[in-house]
Length: 622
Image (cartoon, rainbow, N blue to C red):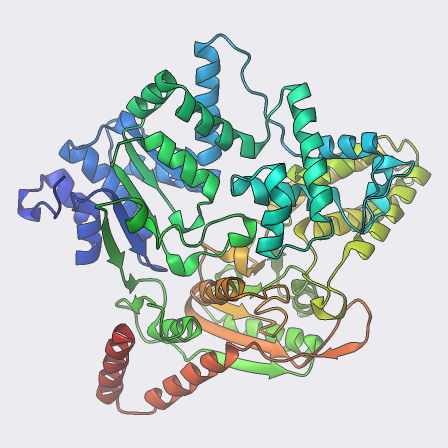
């Protein structure tokens, strides 16, 4: 294997065009001959630009064939963006770009066709099968030891723990390549204490696997596990797959889980033609099974690898990055600011309660929309969905158009589909109304944000969605005197189409820290920076706290020009009684960075620039 880069003087005009506008770090990452290659790409450093141009460079210089390139991503949107960018770079033919799951499914279909077998059937959600398993086992969905009683899954609509929680536990384990027999010990080691006892999860999971086998279906995690097993056990299949995908690229490598890593190694075999890009400072999904150490351990896992760094952030001002770097702490390397104009110093504001915070943020948002700036260039981020509700109300009261990210397409979410499947059988208005009451009762019982989340964690996405569904059912019952369960579904579809049109309008975005990853806005408000939210209450050990810190860093780096941080001294949760709150422990670092920037802004420009340069050098040495 050879390392280094080919001199740009030797590049053809088409290759030179790929490097136009790239900084020296980006040029090296695009053109290096080192492999396996790991590119550590900080926030706003041009990660996707480098990944797509490296693929194009390899094809154009003749060291890779487009038909044999495999680019793996984590979402259909990301794979579509890769395809679009590569097409614009003038590749002679398209490459295979897709998610781990979609490419694995294609491989299993190809294998089934070669062997004359029935193609794999993939279920969209575990919930239906799990509900059938619970019903046949007569298991209650109430917490505590397993209880057997009549009614089975009928308890699903009236209980304070959900089948979605059970499915999440199974998904977490499968991402780590665990089986039912491993779950109890693994859950104890990881400190997972969900509403379902680990022993319950293990034996229900066994029954779930048996039922899937009986029905001859696969779930999403099975796609990865089954493809890996076939690659390791079937030499002919492995040889075919490795011939087809000779040049492998992985985006957002910090988000891979153990199951995906195992599949990647099986795909590669002895091949070292691998390039991954990612940012260890943006590893924020270990709660969902991702391995946050995957990218930092890359040199150990792939011997002889080349590791390069993209350290310049072209998105955010130095002022924003100073605050983001302060969140990470001195031991972490934050990206340095690119050639952007100086921006305003980020602000930190404390409020008396959540209503005052919502009102203050609402007024600040109105001031931020100056001439030349649209509402859509402003975002309000929080740690949980529930925090955004009072802020949304404050914006609406002030005539500020806003939209909550992730609320649609509601109908495609599995827990919503299951709930609607149940209500479709409600042929009368009275049955629909009773279903709505049951759903509201279930979500109220399931909410564990009581007393500021002290019982564990904030409401799950499924709980919030089902509560929204119940509220929508109330709207439908009010509007239609002849309401039925089947009619509710049609009404929802029409409402969703209308909402989709509204979401194209100019509006402030309200979303969570997690959902904001990969996005950016000129102006960002970070709200609810309090202990219990940032970090979240259930983050107890060092690894979980480190991830919460990285999550706050990700939220900070969504801002390009302005960053505003706030917290409330007390909040009223479902109990109604105000509960004292403390600022996030990382807010002190943000305030210190704010004070340093304020002092620098008051000095002479030349002195300030020298001081900033010295600060950057000191951070790099730390």
